[in-house]
Image (cartoon, rainbow, N blue to C red; front, side, top):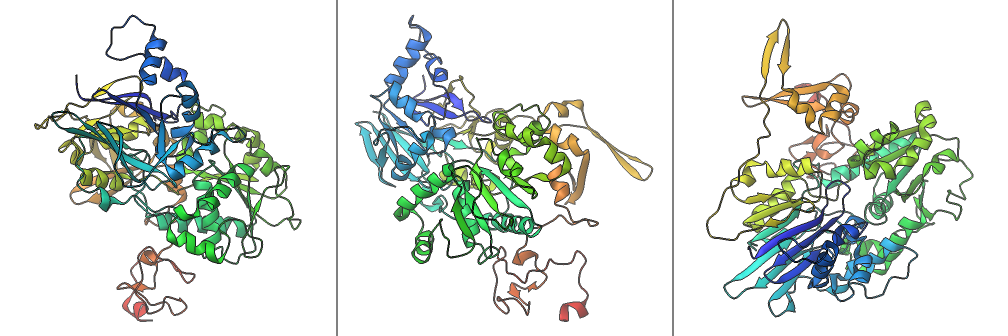
Length: 578
């Protein structure tokens, strides 16, 4: 039997919580516990044993003998089962970062959670958990306190190492610094267990995402529309408040931002953890309140006890940030003014299923309150839209981390199975590493040796025919394409976009989101406002006379109030000289 084995109780597929058992020789480590119901864990059975004990008893005995549970961060899909785990197995210690230990109780608001449910580990310091087992953690970005961990089992013949990322983000966000890649370079773990939430997608730079969202929110408010932003308890809700407090398009604007009690509880706890935040956030907090403020615009207020914005008798548009797992329809029905409900773009499919009345996913079921707004949606008094403000690394960040760590085995967890398969299908990974796609209830062994055994590559390629018919081109592809769940989004519009890439013709399906973000009457895709896309930026400097950046060297992802989009046609020389 291999010295390194992983058994997923939940692999984080879709809305499935993440919970893995890692076996390193005789040591058993539980990685996260995002299960809603621990019966899944209790009924999993003891893989690889022939004991006649009942399945549930074997599983319970196995988990009871675990050396520890490591909680990577406080998001519910990684932590909602931690307290129940502690009650079921009080002898198993629970570890996480100091900030995670303090944020965990927000998963059980109103309950009397033990004050020392989770023991805090220091950053970047190897800690001995047993004579032959050590752990070392680093910040993972993504959420305050989120940690990635290196576990080392010191066997008689050699040490074995497993690196677990939890959820990670390479870029800096408003409240969290990104994963410190330089500190991890060259660790060379035997096994890397890595999240792949974004699959092989490419994301715009985080600052561009923020600028686009701020522009969208500002535009909606200028149109007289109030905005509802459903969020989880921790993470995006606090990021949105900080974005609205500090973005130039909202600084000084006479707008009220309302925050419901659940998201507000996360804001309050953040304020108690200020020394753990980046220095830029601490500096901001020295000059003005981080969240709650009546003096400096925009105002940020807590929602009243009746759940509706109070104190704004003018009927002016407002922005509401509220917990997404409760019925939020009353916000839109309580006033006659128009509303726009903005959800993360990862919820696009759930939105479509919910509006059609056939929610097929847990996310869709959580958004069931949208059906209450069906009549308002038809009249367009209430609109639905999505935005992108990711806290997960995209394909570039994921492959960059893998190449810098240089493991022998890579196991992809946490994400849509199709997206994870896309990552495992990348040639740059297949030629270097042994790749695995764990699923719940199926054990994965990681044989360690000096000889690299190349796994069989999946075949994601569909062969077809292309034929010229009169003045058009007919593309014929096999029906097997329709079995992929992504076919629904493409078939929704039936439109594709083609372009040459060298000698290759690249075909891209256009979704409803793509159509909304294409320049009308032109062939150039819509791009968010930035110095890179501004008509006044030439040779890296700003030439806009009305811009505060005039004459200065500018960053490509910067932006200012004088932004004007670059024309779709090349400027004439006399225009350029103007």
